[in-house]
Length: 496
Image (tube, rainbow, N blue to C red; front, side):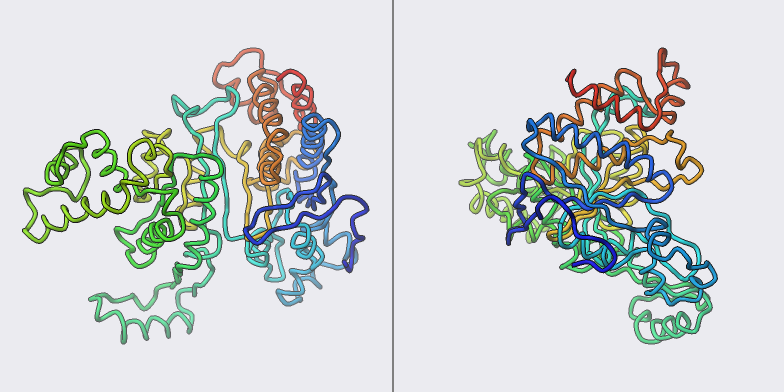
């Protein structure tokens, strides 16, 4: 099966059904990549935690069958121990990539469907692009999923970090991060600018400076809808109240605005019985509370309540009819299935402008549970959200595609701390929790979360959180090594 590594000696493969549901055996084969730098420390601490949770939750009837695969420096020095940096620098990009990401690694993740990964460093030389990005692109892991939640009693820059409990679905393959750009002054950039200025920009009344660098921002209905579909399915499965489409469509109407529109379109076409738009919700809720009101009264009251687009007084006759028709159509089409007590059971689909969303995360944190957004917005929002709950040390993440999922820490390799047994393994432990949930092993996942939370509340923490707690005036804080932190979590499994 593999060229450079042996087949797994134990366990059984996970199978994926047509509807993307998983058939998980009691001993699933889980490929894992140790990672570079501190990856060696955090993976050693993480795997025993996950193993202990599975053992305790299922009484020994289930087990993770770990299968080591290789990436990064570990792959290079195992399979190419005599390759010099000079030889590497002369390789073409594909051959150099294979040094750090062997084909066996991709094949193992494809075959066994679920994998856990430590952080990887992008090597210098050879024109090699980010190994993390390459894994996502080659495996078509189109959704970056980042749950953001407050644990323990760790310091936070906000007053109520416990209000944060959201999952961000970030599109992973499109937008300005797709890497389609040309440097200022290059012949390609000049040629493209010339064509745009001559044939397309005049109709827009705009001109691009000739010395500009140029990038392309592709946003497609295919890429947008599959990301939003995953977010909606997640929200429905986990009984979340809403999915928020975050975009900058007020400025970029045909890319970010289209992302928003395609999201609403998808919800209507594929999830009509399970979902309701925020605007539809407002109309139906008003009818629930005031069934005696006629359409015109409802429009006026919706306007008074702050809903946009219901101002009859300032509308033309055509505009007024459009407002009234919207209310009538929503009630005619949806009230029977979505009205009354049924409204409480529906998933609300809403949207927010990206810059406003940063404020909303701070001021109305608990109003949001699942966010679906474009690549760049998702990058910014997820890191901003994580800052409210203690930073990247506890930031879990996964990159998920159709039938394949790669769970990983979201922080870097921190090479100066490598092999010192001091780094916080919390991020990859929580990524392991996501993996257990993905497998459907919720009991084991819950056990890890409860034990981790107790460990943090006991103020037994790694150096990064110790420093923060001491600076904030916490007393009796105990500093643990990376491995000790993992063992403390295991010990607390008997106490939660």
